[in-house]
Image 1 (cartoon, one colour):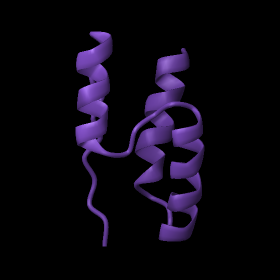
Image 2 (tube, helix red, strand yellow; image 1 turned 60 degrees about the vertical axis):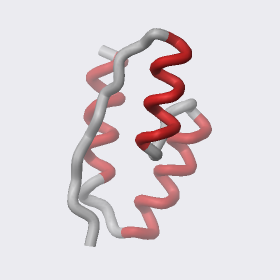
Image 3 (cartoon, one colour; image 1 turned 90 degrees about the horizontal axis):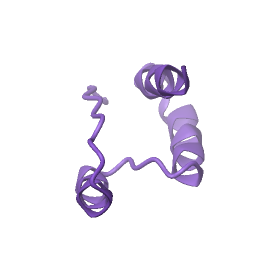
Length: 59
């Protein structure tokens, strides 16, 4: 359930205006989520955990 909620939030981020998007990125960082691929990949390698990626188009 928790991972479904997290995935929904990440997908939802793609539909918000830039200002709200930045606020949610701050929250994501506080929860330990990464918004940078290289950082996330390094963390996944270090911990042995898989990556969950969301691709989206930003204007």
